[in-house]
Each structure stands twice: as structure tokens, then as C-alpha cells.
Image (cartoon, rainbow, N blue to C red):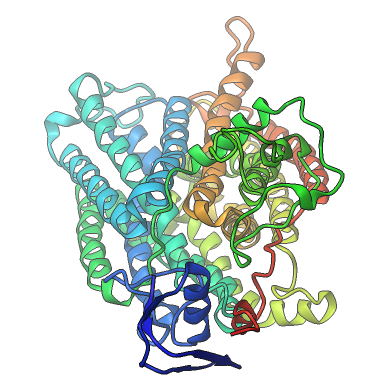
Length: 611
């Protein structure tokens, strides 16, 4: 509430004149919002600065705050991905776990890593805000990283080395060794759950959606955010993977832990520059209210005109009514009665539409999850494939198989700036769309690239097996085959194309299309597609092995990759991905983008003409 002493307030084309002569007059919230909107120095989206005052554009947010958020994400990505991409090597070589089981363990860990963002996203949206959530959960992740470093350094927390390196089965980790390993891993996963959904959302919060000049920079922010992610990934899969393979996992885990400490410090130092979106209460409660209100009026007749449905949201926050999921509209039917003002009996059209928005996201969520089921194989089986291929470059350097991801990142780092600089303006000339193509079109192009990636993987694996057969290495799983590891480049390069289109498209789509009270939840929803994809990978590997094994005959995927049918598995994933793409096309055609009523009007129109 704002207090003025005045004899009159005159507002004309953004000019505000106040005469301090009369008694105090209290202005209501609508007029207060209008007055704030008249001031171009403050944001129009309700964001505040670190003192809880309305955020000013000159001192907070925008590209001036973005570098600090980029820095936080850069260090977090180096810490988490340096662990994730070479984890299967650590399980197999250090903990002596069988390859199929190690692949499933990695998939389960990565799945959890991308599922815990629901926890962090919910807490940030409802109670803590993004800034505090990021710092609290980063501390949890740091504890997990330290525990993993201790596990890698102390010999008592690892099984003894194999006496014969050519052995297929060596003494495996057990008891306290497994307990410490899993405690560290899942502390990392939990901590990551508060960072991943909130860093990107907080970065997007730095751009005022109500300001046309700032809002057009939001898509560029997502592109550059993913570019920074890729820089961190490149460092992690080259420098850190090399350290892990050639110096030791103690250093490979310890250095990222130190970087995470630095990231937390730098992020906190930027507090005065950030814009903050205050927490708005439990989004789950708002969803439950709509469902309960709709069920209690399940026999109520729909009004002839949707304009008769109850609505009391402010014009710039109102969401236009849609005809999808009409059964939920009953929650906004106004009936005489003593309980009508209870939010559990009567909801606004905007609140109902927020629930519809979440429901509309689910088919897109489901059809994009399988993309990561296919691509998960490059963090497990493709790494083990590479370990059997010729990797020596010169007399001293041996290329780490987990570093093959460098080629996917080269694709991202080269093409993503070109996409933002050239492709978007070029496509805009033909489509008229601000981002060149829609987010759903962008995601679809990436899905096609993931299918081609699996086709490439299948062809290369068939060639690798032919080489093993030709040289008599089928029963020598540890032997290095005379075929270069760089045959794997095309599948990794195509994975990079998938990330440019699908992953960045998902990041933007789920943020923008989520209700404004649930932006971190929306980002968590996008991240959960990666989680579900990895859990599905575990299920598919298990089912395929069970279905293809007969008596003493092992399934397609065994501990000896030279006797496995990995190429058949890749062809199966390509076929399943193609079917999934058809479902995605149907869901995309059905999807209706959200519309915010009057949210794009000039600020001065919010002020009554009579003033």
C-alpha cells in the first residue's frame, strides 16, 4: 500500500503530478500497481530487490546479473557432470561391478539426479524462494561430493585391485564400501535437486516479461545459459575425466568439490544485483482446490457464456479461458451459498486455467522423456564400447572413452551461438515468430536427431563386432580392437544436435508455459523428462535381457560386449524412438499455448481515464 498527501493526482501519458497539501489518502492495490507501472525505472512483474523493495531496472537484473548466475551454473555443471559422465568407469574399474549392472546403477543415479528437482522447485515456488533454495541445496551437494572424494581416496572404502588385469570377474565392493558410495551419490542427487530447477528460472526472472525490450532477451538467455552449461560440460569431460583416468578419482572428485565452494561464494556476492520473485505459497494446494471445487459441483450446469465464470484476478495476471478440460470449469461456477468464498468451493478462471496448463504439459512431457532413454546409452554402453577400441594418440596420450562427449559439446558450442545470431532472424522472416520457430517445432527437430544418433550407434557397433570376430577377440573382452574410437563421433555429434534443439527447447517451453506461480516446478518438470528417460533405460535393459535370454543362452547385453547383441539393442531403441516421435507430433498438434489476458498492454492503460 502507498500513502500520499495530495489535493489531486493527474496521470497523463506516464507523467505523474502530486500536490502535497491535503490529508493522507490510501490508494488501493490496483492503483498502486498502476503507479509502479507508470515508472519505467521499476519492473512490472512484481519482482523485488534483496531489500524487498520493488526492483529497479537500472540497478538489478538483466544481463548485468546474468554472468553471476552463469558462473554458478558453470561450476555446478563441472562438478556434477564430471562425476556423471565417467561414473560407469568408476563402478567397473574401481568398484569391480559388472557392466550391465553398472549401466543400470548409472541410469538410476542420473534418473534420481533429475527427479529431485521437484523437491527443490516446490520449496522455491512455495516457501523459500529461489536464492535461498539454491544456497541450501548447494551445501548438500557439496557434502556429497566431499564424501565421494573420501571414498575414492581411502583404500578401505574400495575393493582390492585385480591381481590379473585380464580377469573378467574381480573382487567387488561390498558393505560399508557400497554404503559410503551410495550415500555420497544420493546426497549429490538431492543437492542437485535444489540447484537445477532454480538457477535457470532465477536467470529468466532477471528479465521483465512485462517489458517488451527485456522480454525479447529471454530466449537469448536460455540459449546462452545452455552454452555456458556446455562449456562446463566440456571442461568436466576433458580435464576432470583425464584426471580421473590418469591421476586418480580422488583428484577427479576433489577439484570439482572445490569449484562448487567457489560457485556458492560468487553466487552469494551477487545478491544485490538480482531480482527476486517472492514465494507464492503451495502450488499443489492451488491445484487441489480446483479439483475439489470441480468435484463438489460435478452436477452443476455449465453457463452459456464463459464470461459468467468467476474471476477476480488483476487484468495483467488473468489467464484467458480455454475450452480444453472443460470439466474443471465447474470449479469457477458461481452458486449462491455460504461457502462460495472458500477457495475449496470456488476458484477463479485463472486458477482453473493454471491447472489446465499443467495438464496440457503432461503429453509433451511424456513424449519427450523417451528421447533420454535412447541417449542414456552414451553415458554407459558407448563408454564401455570406446574402452575396447583403439584410443592412443601419439606415444603418450590415451584418449579417455568418457571424453567422447567432447564432440557433442563441440557441436553445441559451435552451433548454438550461430543458431541465436543467424538462424533465428532468418527463420523469423518466413514464420513471423519471434524465436524463428516455435518451442515445440524446435523440440521435434531434436527428437529426429536422437533417432539418427541411435541408427549411427547401431551401424558402428556392428562394425566393431565384425572387427572383433575378424581378429579372434570375441572371447577377449579386455582386448583393444584395431578400430579407432573416433568411429563413435557421429552418434555423439548427433546427440549434441538433440541438445541444441530438444533440451534448450524444453528449457524454454516448460518455463514459459508453466503458471507464473510454478516456474521452478515447470523447470523441474522438464528436468524430470531426463530422469524418467534414464529410469526407462534401466527398465528397457532389464526387460530386453530377460526376454532375449533362453536357458544357458545369455541375453543381448552381457558383461562381454564382444559377445553381446548391442547393435540389435540400438536398432530397437531407434524403432521405439520413431514410434514415440509420431505420438509427439500428435500431442504437439493438440497443444494450445497459454494466453495472458491484457498482459501486453502499455502500462498507462492500467490507470482509469477518470484520474
